[in-house]
Image (cartoon, rainbow, N blue to C red; front, side, top):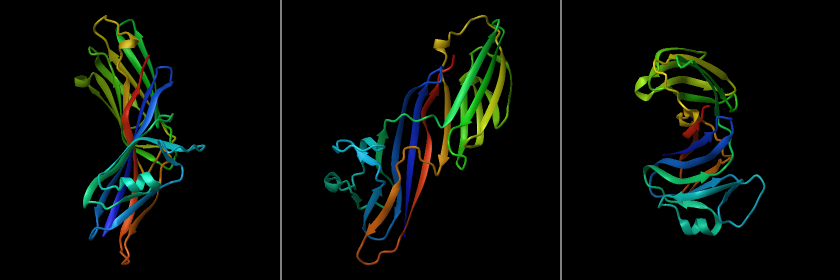
Length: 255
């Protein structure tokens, strides 16, 4: 008999061409995969930094969750009374709760770009990507999508890690890095020919987008303190927790 709990968070952010964070938020969820005999009651405890909106309390360095939604199995009256998350879970996978956190977080993978046009005949890209998270963590399946002009041709590129592929159907250069350790910085250089003389205004350029997933990592400060089975008969079970952080709508504007 076991119960697996996954805490998944999406980091969403928009960064200006001047490297200023325009918008950032964290969208999180607690997902469970339950295989228990009978119908035992479970209680989930989060760390003391957590505040739910409308609690009427203030505390320094507290994390206030917004737009909190619970699965129908959660006893809302108990939660409204003392903030205990108590529930009798269904069997199998389900989302226990979801939430949103408005907070100024630095992008976990920071991307800088320098784009140079030369007499409307060619364009050069210098892209730097740095992992802004602890060295003991690793981002997996990173993809950085760099928009290029629709009429670009004769692509040439090289990178210090991963592989770069021109995707003409997306008008973009796809830079994929399978494993991206925290604190590391990688560089991509690319060159495209431009057969037409049309200029592309910086305002109209699509932003660079970033995809990634970091297992066993949390950015919000939210942690599970306990997952208890409330049963008088000495119920035996094996609960465990897994944390995953991944990108949401993650965009970086270019000059």
